[in-house]
Image 1 (tube, helix red, strand yellow):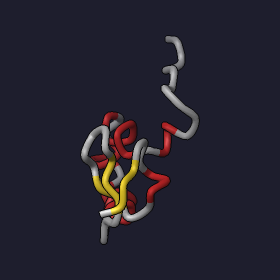
Image 2 (tube, rainbow, N blue to C red):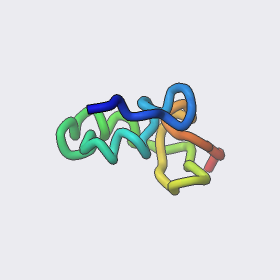
Image 3 (cartoon, rainbow, N blue to C red):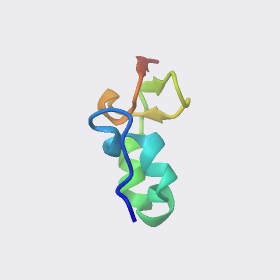
Image 4 (spheres, rainbow, N blue to C red):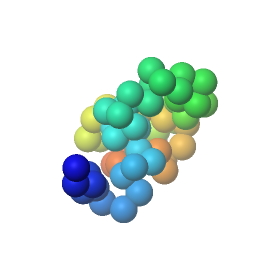
Length: 61
């Protein structure tokens, strides 16, 4: 199977990719740490995260 191509560097650390891989189900404690007290929202997918680096196109809330 071919390796999945990322649309931009670091995408494998962003919530849109991680949730697509089931991260929010398989690693709930780690997921909660990323979203707790969310301060940023991704303009692309609408997900919220505590740190901008965990989103593709973050804006401050």
